[in-house]
Length: 385
Image 1 (cartoon, rainbow, N blue to C red):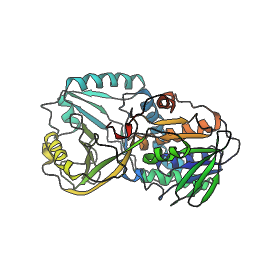
Image 2 (cartoon, rainbow, N blue to C red; image 1 turned 90 degrees about the horizontal axis):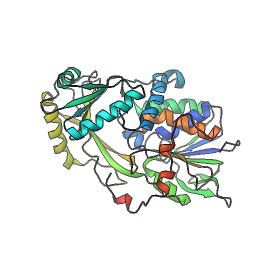
Image 3 (tube, rainbow, N blue to C red; image 1 turned 45 degrees about the vertical axis):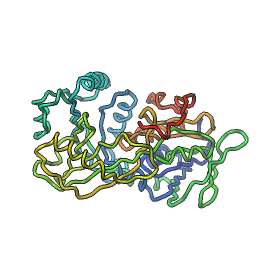
Image 4 (spheres, rainbow, N blue to C red; image 1 turned 180 degrees about the vertical axis):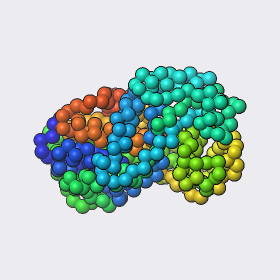
């Protein structure tokens, strides 16, 4: 569809919703309202760790990050707000043959798309991250230009320009209903602050997407899962120039910070869906064991803080970025399965293109909502992904 001058309502004021508002308003469209049930960036975005990487197994995820990285590089010029994009690299450690074969296939795809990615032997792993235990490793994959940045700073930048461009932002406002006319098209939303008429409604509600979709009869397979992370005290063997390192055997990761401390986590992917985020201290011992095995020079890590947030997962770990054909004027940008922050510039740009021209210059067909419409969702909300 092409916008006809009517209002666009974006449900969700996190990293995706604010990126859409920024990109659409930067294209010259001004009648936009963002509705956020808390404060901007206070939901799932507030608990994201800010990784930006190219190492994916699917073309669409790689291309979304490629498009986004160019934006992150120019962020301060585009938004007039600071963003410290640290290019410390990403290192994935591989210790079994099946994972090695899968990553070799991934590397071939990544290189075919122009990603700078290296396959390291054990000596090269030690050069990249001194102190990693390598005697039980086969190899590693390394992208030296990957890195991380602050999701909070990104939201602030998006909002800075969106507000300047006339975007209306409602915070602490609950969405109670999505209204659909007799013609089957959205006509607006009902909120705790009143009714807002709209030509287009974009659901960018993160972990709350399924609940919001049900307001207009859609079952959007986006399920919240609690994810946790821990901050550590500074260690002499840790510094901000070391890569974010993931041990594929256990899922444990170590994200060195400029301060000399680190963020650790990653052994909580296989958990039941839950709408409540909480730190599971029963998993700490397993995480500590995995980290001490892989990074023996770290010694005892002192935990100085912990947090948990909700990660919005889909059954195939890929986002939904598309119109919802069942309801004209309704669009979905959700289910990013942990990749929303790093892909947010490209997603915001793509939704803006869809609304203004009806098509995108990236092939987002693998992310279309229709891939789930004819699937048997069954009891997916109780499954483990």
